[in-house]
Amino acid sequence: MAERTLRSPDALIEAGLAPDGARASLDAVAERYAIAVTPEMAEQIDAADPHDPIAAQFVPDARELRTLPEELTDPIGDEAHSPVPGIVHRYPDRALLKVVQVCPVYCRFCFRRESVGPQHGGALPRAELDQALAYLRDHPEIWEVILTGGDPMILSPARMHYLMERLAEIEHVRIVRLHTRVPVVAPAHVDDALITALKRAGKTVYVALHANHPKEFTENARAAITRLVDAGIPMLSQSVLLRGVNDDLDTLTALMRGFVELRIKPYHLNHGDLAPGTAHFRTTIAEGRALVGALRGRLSGLCQFFYVLDIPGGAGKAVLNPDALEAHARGEMIIRDWQGGRHAYRDHAGES
Image (cartoon, rainbow, N blue to C red; front, side, top):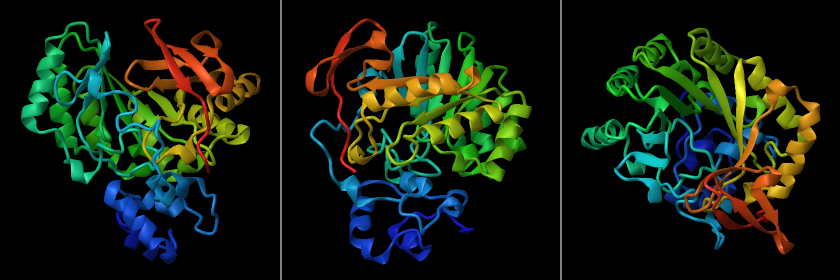
């Protein structure tokens, strides 16, 4: 196993995870987007498999340099709903608190790829955190705070304890949810000190785990997840439908069953966002709905999830069921948001 996180094309080539002939294109990708592959994930990559699902998610690819006209720097419209730094308040009863701009790994399909990475800073500065917490305190309709970023679980136990204590002071915030990859990509970080910091605030805490392929459920990941669940922290799943990674019945079946066997409730399967340089990952909505439909009778009710699209521009998530869609010719669609608004969406796959 690699002893350190791989953060550059040179490190990836030295570890045998990228060919030396790709150095120029990988350097070009690295100039624009952050790179990080943890030892836990590097160990899972089969370098002899050109279609390895872990490598596809974390090892940079020259195709990331191609940006399509419809791709957006802020594909889900966070900025339109950010009243103060660190806060995204899109829905009435919940708000995002983006506490860090870094992650232990950088997904090659990340919808925030233009705003995360060490070049964008680390934790939210204390003055901006105070401003964000003041916003939460001044809005009593906010019942749930979703910690995101970046990956909030990368915080040290001391910083997590401080953050949770500050949130505990806001009486109307009853739920704190963390969106994270840490239990699978850096499982050793999920130790007793971090779990204690999460539980100390007296809030109901949920952890939403991002995983996209059953190979991510390593022995160490399973142990980290077990520590969280045994500590009384309920867990949900979030995944992204990715061409060449999990866009087939067998992989999605194994993934959802894997979540349930680990006592994680499947929650969201996200359609690929229109992030720059990610077209090669995207399926069509029609392909995604066909997969989800085929899984309905195949999988236990415990394994069922919502297939969702973040509507470009900031209108929020739409569950991609028939009631939310009006299909038209040549892949044109109208998608209805949670408020009944209608949004045009062009449904087409990216080129592989």
